[in-house]
Amino acid sequence: MLGIALKMLFGDIVKMLGLVMGIAFSTLLMAQQGGFFIGLISRAANTVTEAQGVAIWVMDPKTETAEGPTAMRDVELYRVRGVEGVRQASPLVQATTTLRTPQGRSSAAAFLGVDDASLLGINPRFVVGSPEDLRRPDAIALDQLGFSRLWPGEPLATGKEIEVNDRRATVVAITEALPGFTAPVIVYTRLSQALSYVPGGRNRLSFILVEAEPGRDPRAIAQAISAQTGLLALTTPEFQRRTIDYVLNNTGIAPSFGVVIALGAVVGILVTGLTFTLFVNDNLKQFAVLKAMGLSNWRLLGMVLAQALVVAFIGYAIGLWIASGFFDAVNQPFSDLKGFWLPWQIAVMVAGATAVIVSLASLIAIRRVLRLDPATVFRG
Amino acid sequence: MPAIVTTGITKSFGAGETRTSVLRGVDFEAEAGEMTFLVGPSGCGKTTFISILSALLSADGGALSVFGTEPNRLKSGDLVRFRRDMVGFVFQQFNLLPALDAAENVAVPLIIQGVSPRKARQRACAWLELLGLGAHLGKLPSELSGGQQQRVAIARALIHEPRLLVCDEPTASLDAETGRQVIELLREVSLNPERAAIIVTHDDRIYPYADRIAFMADGRLTHVERPDPARIPARPIRGETQP
Image 1 (cartoon, each protein chain N blue to C red):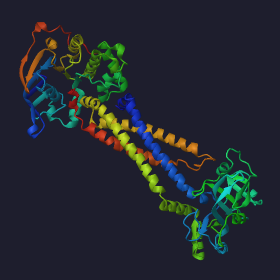
Image 2 (cartoon, rainbow over the protein chains, first blue to last red; image 1 turned 180 degrees about the horizontal axis):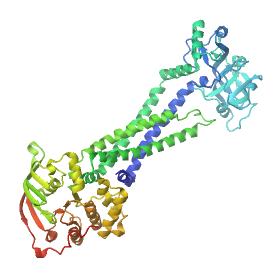
Image 3 (cartoon, rainbow over the protein chains, first blue to last red; image 1 turned 90 degrees about the horizontal axis):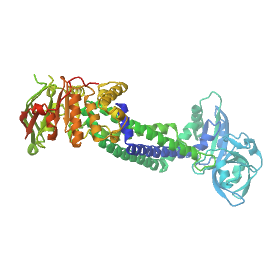
């Protein structure tokens, strides 16, 4: 009977397309917004994610997020270095400032000043140049997005000069850094340079980046640092989580995306439910004939569910295909939406939501089929 | 003993003040190998009565036996199997599945019985060949004329060799000539000693094709007539028309 169910479904191509489009649109909305949500909140922690080789982040206890540090005294660096299990502790200065070209173009940027000697915490993906180039005078490493904003249409090149708070800086390298949350453009430089580029008070140290001794548990070292210095020490995953939690709890991002995702599901349920009910209503006479001819309720139920599942599968596949195509298109080095992607977890969750949508949408239709009086076959 | 016997069948619809008695005690008999017409004015209960005979509805009261089975005593699952194996239907509006071609439509009862779609289609094609529709096997109902659709419906009603054939106004949607051809075809292919055919009709032009005519009025069977045997068209040798 499965073949008959599918022929009935594909026999009414207009309604089938309506069903498929309803599911596809709903899937697209949920997947696209879900991916956007993940991409956006991940940006808040990209500074932490990108820092290569860092096991522990030490910060002022008032620091809530990677992009909003409370500055510490320089002396804290030496105290952290004295904790057992710390192989290396390096300073990191982070600030948001504005870059300007001589031609007048400007862009906000997150400035990350890493330790002059170790360069610990720097993103390793250099498209042009290398981390060692940062040792040159006035050197900064700009990311691809920043380059495209400041010199639109020009091929990637080093040697370009920009102005940062009335000081000259030279682009000596170009990185493939993931954008930040507050400022999408990321600039790496040495700490000594960063201090001169970014205005600030007496205390300038944003974070202390710690490499653990081999074989030592970073979590235990972090606890030791906290205990001995009174600072907040978190492993890299813990700090990522803390940063994301801060964004979720202190911005309207989660509820606003949640509303859109819920709307996607509701639209899916309504469109699919109404269309599916119309489809089944139009086919009630056919179901009644089958029932009269001796088809059991269970097999009729199987037919309706098979129709619903096929529609759901096709609609989900189309919706997901469009959503993944969208993310493929926007997740480009020079795009403002760089770093947005469709995680497989979102795809799985949307599949689950689609199954729920189709189940709910089918419920009314299935009830009508199960309660169908086969004697209606004799009515005109 | 007659193939079908009913005694005092009653049926009402609705409740309270809206309760309407549709059947008020129907006593009826039909023989295997015969075509019995059920006639009467609209609303006299013909359709309700054949719905009960074919186990689509249950009677409120009375006794019913169809080839020894008492549908009123069957449980729901057995009723479904009874309809699946014992009853074939021909409807006024044909009720073919519009998305299936002629052969697929005819194959449906066998597929419901669990026969593989391939074998079911083979047998369906043989039936359609027998009914002169060999050139239309792959056509959708919308591509067939009314007479052709009714022939497809007849093939569908008979392919699983039911013992009871129930036809509701099989000629009402057809012009006079096509209606005559359809009723002749029904006589030709449906009658055999193991099967009884009950045909509800308003079309008195086809009365001569009946073996007996049961008249209903106001929820009761009023009388039964046997048409003048001289007027009954010649019939083929029964039982020799299975594909």
